[in-house]
Image (cartoon, rainbow, N blue to C red; front, side):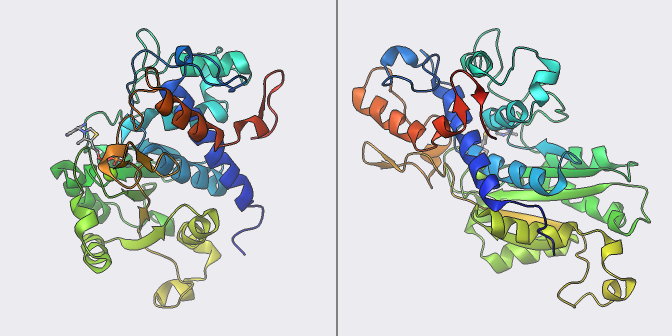
Length: 342
Ligand SMILES: Cc1ncc(C[n+]2csc(CCOP(=O)(O)OP(=O)(O)O)c2C)c(N)n1
Ligand SMILES: [Mg+2]
């Protein structure tokens, strides 16, 4: 009953498009559609950005978009994943509302890619120039507190917030977990506050080490989160159907369930109080798995630029080309017409 109108395949295609846009921003200064074989001169002279968190951001954002349409505020803790946020804002036309150069044709695509992490262009992190941003995420820790602040006194608002598992080790993020107890139950319609939907991005790694949350058993993590007053909901991997199945019951308005169901909270379809999603995903998923004998995806080495020398090393250039092609961007974007489908 929850899935009327939700096209899982479309969500999956959206991930691919967004992931391509991320990789193109990170690496390319030309040949954005791979109309000819990738050449060293197509690669930016200085590669500066963060890949590892991006697919996960695209997954969470895309699934929220599918179920909530535009009716939510998104707070991004890992602001270093800016290319993913930018890809979503570009694809949805939100960027073009504030920057007329971000068109949905080749010029617009070139504009966002060339100017990512570029002097005078877009910063490498989310920033005040990013539409709708209320938390930069450059200094980790403030995402959850910011989300509660945004929902305070706004019962009409739904604020989704993505917290990195590294960020989850900061004192600020952990202290902000207590805010749930000050917020009442917005879902019942009896609170003056909006709804906060936290997502812990359990990708296992921070900059150069595994995270503490990833070292906990499911039970330990679950009990920790429950102890703060949330209902933990685990989402394992990026399958849109699994993701939507986790989201839908937690987002169902209370009035969809009867008061009787609400009172019997052990009934399987009962209203879920203060959901807290734990989204388990591989760091650097959909990117290169091995580079020069080193494990990249599912490792801390996926955090920043996973292929370091594509401009000077032909083998790495080919690897990057294969990676870009794996997203089949030519099926959604035409050199003359721009986006054919989204
Ligand atoms: C307070 C603070 N400490 C350290 C850093 C440096 N830093 C930038 S990204 C990062 C790793 C973040 O890991 P996580 O939150 O798990 O994000 P993800 O794995 O999704 O990239 C760190 C430690 C920072 N930005 N802010
Ligand atoms: Mg992490």
